[in-house]
Figure 1: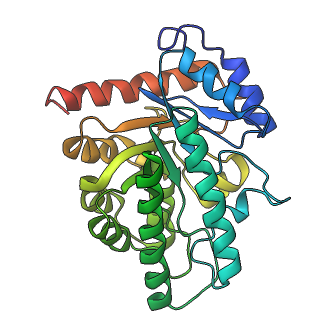
Figure 2 (figure 1 turned 135 degrees about the vertical axis):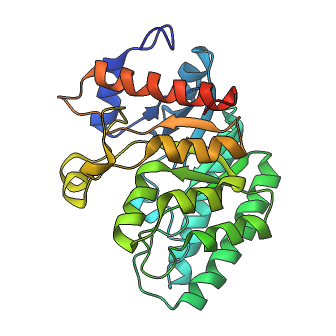
Length: 287
C-alpha cells in the first residue's frame, strides 16, 4: 500500500472503518471522507491533503445532525416534505464544509427512501432535488455527484438517472460497481449495458464487489480483486470500469471496501493494483 501513498497506514484505515467515525476511503487520485465528528472534520481533511491526494466528500460529511444518523441524510424522494427539507439542509451543510476544506466534489445518494411512492411522483421529486443540488454546487463552487442506486422501490432505472444528468449538466454521476451489480441482481438488469448508458455522465466511481445478497448482508462491501469470477456471482468490475474509462479517462476511482478485522492488506493492495492496471490500459487505448 505504501508504494501508492507514502505515509499511509492500513491499520489506521481499519480503525476508522471499524469505528464508523471519521471514515476515509482511498482512491487513485482523490480520497473520500465522511461521517466525521463535528470537532474533527477539518483535521481529517487536512491529513488527507497532506498525503498529496485530492479530496472528495461523501454526504453526510459531519454526522449525526440533530440526533439523526446517516439514514436520514439523503431522503430526497421521501413522501414527507419536512423529511426531505431536513435532508436538503444537511446536504447544504456537507457541500459548504466541502468547499471550506478544499474538496473537489461531494457525492450524495438520491433515492435512499424505500417508500413505494408512485413513479411519477418520484420523478418529480428527483428532478426538483437535482435542481436544488445543482444550485448548491453553483453557490459553493463544488461539484455534486449523484450516486446511482437501484434499491428504491420505484425509482431505480438507470435511464431515470441519465435523464437527471441531461437536464442538469452541472451535476455529475457517481457509478458504484457494487451497487450497480446489486441492482442487476435485484432488478434483472444488464450491468454492462447500464454502465454504457450512464458512462457519458460519470465523473467518479466507487469500486468494490459482491456475489450475492447473502454475502452482502454478512460481509458488506467485498474488496475488489482480480480473483473474483463472474460465474461465482461477482460483478464484471473490469468491464464496468472500462465502459466508463472509454467515456472519461479522467474518472476519479475511489475504493469503498468494508475493512474488517480479518481483511488482508495484501488482498486489498492486489485489488487496487489491478484496478490501476485497468485504468492505465484504458488510458493507453489497450483496455
